[in-house]
Length: 599
Image (cartoon, rainbow, N blue to C red; front, side, top):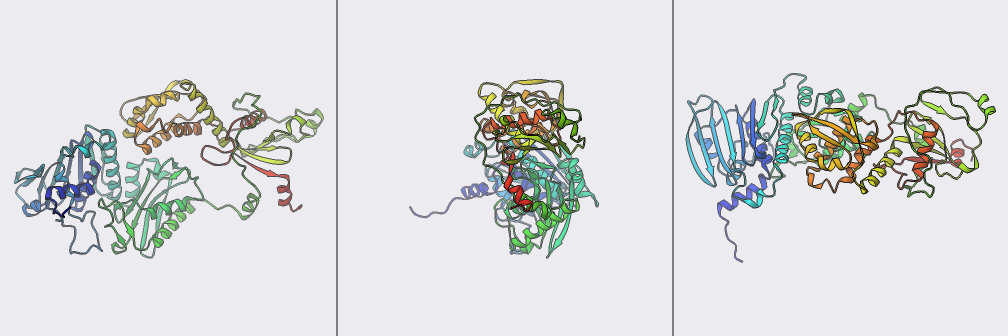
């Protein structure tokens, strides 16, 4: 087949495919143009998730007639002072955005520079240009994009729901607002709840802006980052390890004011938190990096979402050190060498596949008042035994183990220490059990068993629990309610930005409903599609089981501890929790003797 030159309209549509992936891509390009124009207030209006309407109004420097007409041409830009691509100091620089957007929508641009008597307006409708014509307006620029992808049905059908597209636009504005704290952002439309983030100035601007967007509790649970090395400056806020989330949606990275996705930065954060978080939990943080523009290549991705550092090793090391110092200031310390040596003698068993003996005692968890422990084996021994009331260690009297208990794989409970770990003794070993992790697995398996036989039984709340959430999270939970009801969770909308929980799964008992709903909302946001919930049923059950299990700090009676051990022995896979961590660790008698130098 002979080579031929493609027509201009097809070239523009191909270029649009690189730059305009979805409505959020359009918003990003247009708002970045407004920021580069020096805008101090930017108003964004959308309809049907941006498919029908995107309107961006700013109070920037505006454009005169010559610039306004030229702005619609391909590869026309005011963002490059010369022809070099090694010193990019603006957000936009390719000069393709407006031409590309105009090729797949009905586009109009009205602009008025300082000192002009009135504004001018130009338009493109399906490739046909109109104007410029006079247009009354204040200083700045107004861009309207209508009927996005209407002329390209194949692209339109691959867009997500209006709510999903509107949420994607909100996410874009969140990131731009974080990076540009001195700009007032307003986001409105019939497809969303309004957002109004006034400009923040002064020393506390970073904290105030992040509190606006992530939540007022984030700065209160985060450490400030302030570190520089080798010309790389790292700032922002790093969330405490205990303030973690179930996904990375609350991690924000900025390089020279540009929101980016970068493997170097993601890897650096994972490494910095490796000693504090399990692999299924992720920190909340906002990381702002300033670096010489000549040391970073932003011309890697058409949408400018990715970049390439010229010295990634230096950036990675600086970020790790910056976060480590911030977390160190919060009082976190590494384990002592003595503890590390002792832990080397412990071994985690292979995940249990189930034991032959079924549980004989029902597992019931009820708050127990502190009391002295009496021996059930010998009245004489009980009289000679010390009693313990310390909350961190609750010890049963040591007595000869009955013969019928020696064959239990997990032994018999002897004590509970730090109100989280059960100390048990089997025939030839000391066993440490994490009561929360173990019960988490048991609840998870019960959930799965009940779900196979029908809807999970629920229990009604005496008073519905009302939880305030971002509007996009409320929408996801409402859309997912039919699936959640099969799991015994019944909820309703309670006005804008709130969810009312009426019933919870009976298996969970007295659980923290608020944290459960927030964790589920995080999961729904990560999956981004209610249609896949059936495939994610195990993941939803896992999140519920985590909130319905015995918590750390729960004091257990001796019979409760033993009942937990017996049920573990009768439950498949009870040797590991649903996050992959061991539920018990076994220390053989020989290991103890080696610790004390006896062999």
